[in-house]
Length: 117
Image (cartoon, rainbow, N blue to C red):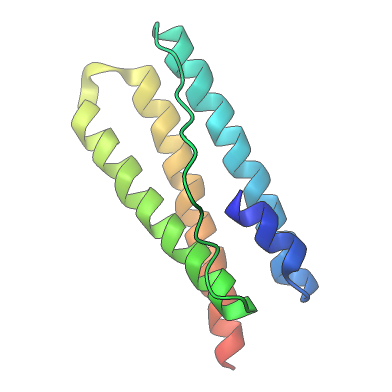
C-alpha cells in the first residue's frame, strides 16, 4: 500500500510510474506466496499495521521504498537459507521474488542517485 499511495503523490512521472509498476510486482508476489501457503495446507495471514510512507517529498518516498526493498531482500535471503534444499518449490518461488526485490532496490537506488545530480 505504501507504493500505491506514494505513486499517486509523486509529481515526477518517471519515479511515479516506476513505483506503480513495482507496486504491481509486489501484489503479484503476495499472490504467489498466498497460493504457495494454501498449497502447503496453510492459511495466508494479512495483518494491518500503521504504515510509514516516508517523508512527504520525492526523496523521502524513494528512500523509504529503497529501505523497504533492502529489508525484503534480507528477509527473503534468510528464508531461502533457512529452507535450503528441503523444499525446492518454495525456495524456487522465494528466489524468484528475491531477484525481483533486488531489481526493485536497484531501481529505487538509481532514482535516489538522480536526485543528487
